[in-house]
Image (cartoon, rainbow, N blue to C red; front, side, top):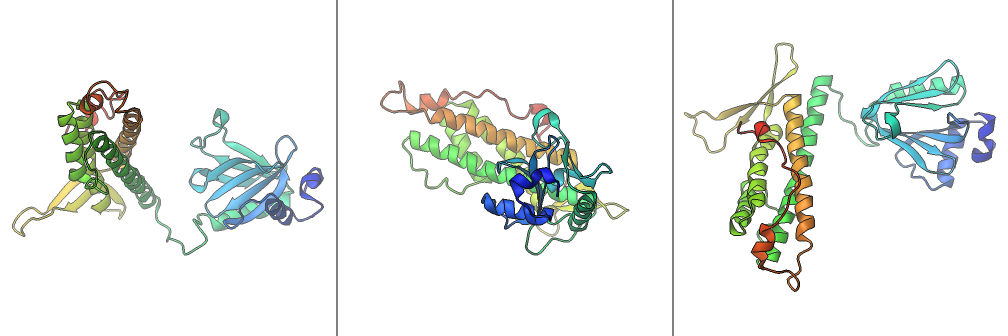
Length: 314
């Protein structure tokens, strides 16, 4: 361990013991930590490099986490000839000036040990049972579909909350709105839009339901495979309520670009739901001029969401 770090980490000669003891002293959660290395940053200040089950952190001598990067955004953790480690990240990491190189100065032997440890363990996602590894295309499709599913789930909650707020302003019971999604939720948004003469609510429901069908394909469909055995952009999904004599399988093209477009559509919907909810939150029946319907009908929206040229019906 570099001598300059003794003041922060004590007199332990072992960089891993020193790093772990430092984390304990500052109350850092080590339950999800594989190992921690005490060393120096590029300015010669003490720091700890923390290797977790699915991330790497850099903690400065004051106990502040200056970097927390997930394994998906780590390109390499490599030893360098001049001594120490270099953590290489993608530009997706939210840092100043899109920084992608982070040094951690320790001895050459210690750096080589940590480099080999990272190579042996990656990817390790958590402390429990692990998923089996997949070829990169299958891994990427699983990641993209997962992003679509989670963003769409947040959208279900956000839009149901928006409809609930509108119902309360109108003096109606929102009991039947809770937990709704799909066509039932779209119908509620459309009903609010028509009743309050709000094209924003009507358009929101229209956009949501159009992308909801795409989300169902991503979630419930079976992805085709090519001659090489790798997944393709074609997704097959059984139709509900069809007879054996009818066509009972639908097909859609959902490659990486299309899945990203679906995710973005739900992301935009979540943003718009927040903006509209912010406006509705200012409603006060004692000070507001006009009827509740007129207040909702004046709901502004700065964005236009996904361009019509990219909507599923085009």
